[in-house]
Picture 1 (cartoon, helix red, strand yellow):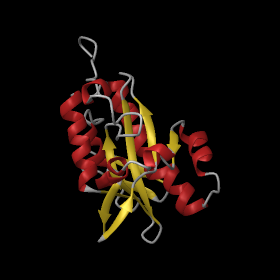
Picture 2: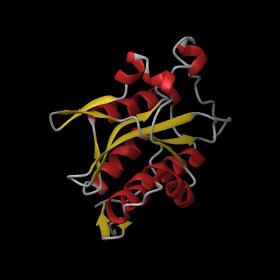
Picture 3: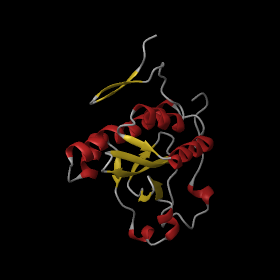
Picture 4: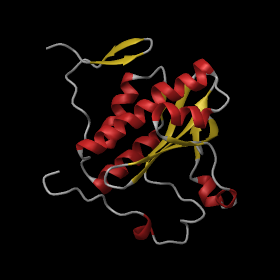
Length: 191
């Protein structure tokens, strides 16, 4: 059996085993982490958020698995290239042109005034506190919002993923009950 490869601009990286499109967010994040350690660093909190997503939403439909694959690829290649190889001055616009995903580099002023909202976007990376406010927005076929929050390590040239899962709190969400904010993804029968 021939090994499968993930192509990158610097060459192909062997996955060492047959590859099926992951049907869980956690499995997809783990696969990209293993295949692209020279481009991304996935923090434990990101893996936890992906597992939480999977427990809440279950197996991804094929359409959603493909969308998750595109999301993860968008940070391992187009985003990485734009930041570390090209140094573009209009990051959000160029990212959207290349990937179709919306990149938000900041939160709203009202959100930034709420300590709980700000605290959700802090992580520890190599002994320092980092801000994972920048995020890529993804809407799945089941109409669920998925967010991938990150920090850019300019020294190590890595996209540090700090969250991949449910929409983190914002100023307009903090007063709504959790059940109203987050609903399970209902797959059609047989999907």
